[in-house]
Length: 196
Image (tube, rainbow, N blue to C red; front, top):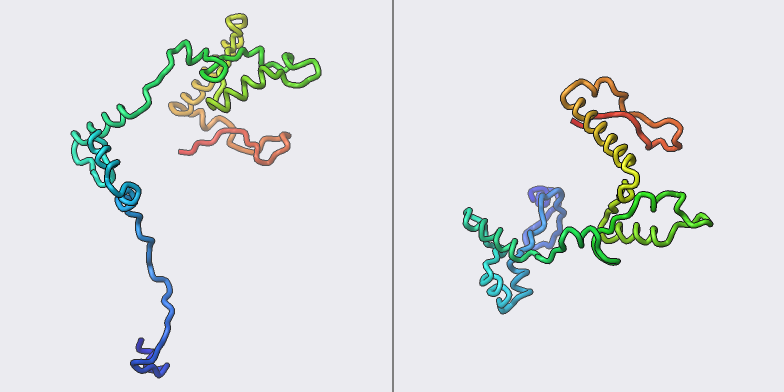
């Protein structure tokens, strides 16, 4: 301001403009209550929620009693439909986790022309799309328990390794993390590293 008068010859009444730099500022926080008032102007939904004991924006949980009320409301408003264990794991064609046999996933079970078996492919894709996982019976209904025993042994070895890392000095004896040789990718790594 002083420079504008002394160097710029500014006098009161003259128009001027100026630039302000590096002024700390932030956006105004959204007022959730104002948004809810706009969505529910007459307050009927608000009143209905209050009657059901629901905590609404602006209602703070100030005591254990308030917390208990909120927990009960959440439990009671959650969906309660459920399937019994038999139907969950052996559901129909569009629901439930249908178990697939290990032998169905073998390369030898493909079609004679080398293409994927459509039934198996649809089973796998449906499981992954609808549930995000696939449940595989490693024993093929009890016909080959040795495969499940091998997998169990692998998990036991993994558990034993990490137990030795945590309780012993195994971390000092295993190779450090480094690029895997002969795999065609510089991003493929092999070895052990701790992120503690």
